[in-house]
Length: 551
Image 1 (tube, rainbow, N blue to C red):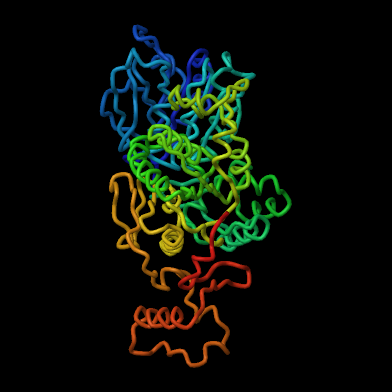
Image 2 (image 1 turned 30 degrees about the vertical axis):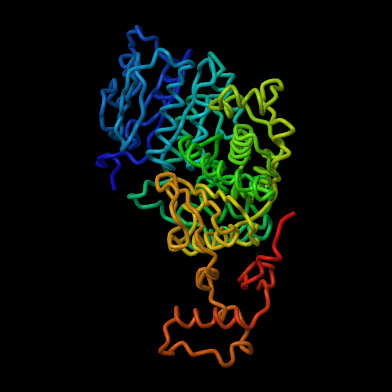
């Protein structure tokens, strides 16, 4: 499809600039084609009473139409949009929405606000560019762009008239390329050439590229012991192509060869694939809802004189685990009750776990925390905030892969937020069955806002449908088909062990037959765990949970 005829650009570029930004913008647009098929939205720091002439100045540098945004304006390809003075702006449904600037809100971060909405609106088809400016605006918003698989570009500090914004963006560690403005233009065009829009035809692949994708995934599994074959392949392929493009490599075949000899790039790729979208108290209303459940759990555990056990699965860099620890500690103080709080936080990324274990966060990473929490649970050390020793001791971090490792057990609360959406339906079923198994009866399951228990919905009762908080209401055994979503036992067993099993043309349905197998095995087998020759948990037989406790 010709990008010029596309009514909605699939890639949208958000550009943040402040002091000294005009020169950088001029050099950027000097080097951009006028028919890229992209929309460019420029967000500047403008004085409320300032009359901007940016549209006239940029018109000398590009043939693209330049428009001052009006509320509700639809973005179109090959157009440049400028934020008006004294306004805040977000994007939703590819429409630009304006509100009056809140003079009482300080500091004002219009670039962060817009980039976060851009990430939410177009996901991996978002591009963020941070140019010259003072302060740190933009360094929070680019995290959201990075987390959804978008591209993050930043002006190098030596070419910036004011280097505050570039330095703070670079300090996040997630900027994909640091370049002078003219080269940023080329990086944008190169990225779009290799990351086609969802309704466009992908660039022609070299023969065998699909095999190379499988080979890359196998290399990661072999070298780093993380298996992505159960993740949604379109997301995985897009992120691998993105990494290859950033390395100036045009084919997966060539990128595979690079990965075989470059462990540093292999680890960069793993970090990109392990999507760690997190921040302290993400979705504040959800945590307010969770607070009521924690309060009830604390009262019950204090009465029982038993520990309160919590598993944060897919904890990334630790913000969610520490958020829950702070929330639980606050509730214990309010109730004047003390229980043994045991929080197990796990992730498949060793890099993420190392940062979580250090418990050190930048000012931007803790910016949304109340002063009370900062004062009580953090110590200011230079330009970072260090988790207090008491809070750090509440959380145990450990490597764990939900798709291959046995679950924790006897849990009162399990959180697994914004991971299931990246998995295939079969993998979702497997993970959910393990999370169900890990919970005590009446235990709480806390999922992401776009996730549900799917096929296991009958095993839970909703506490909050909006914020995906559920209570396990029974201990019934799940069907074997939920425990083994990838291959049935007859496919895993050798020929000699399958003798006497019903043939595939049996009149009994697969579901009924598997239910019979389940009942027979539970009746005849002692409490056991069936594992593969690589120690992957295949099935947990009834009663085994009594022997699976984490100290």
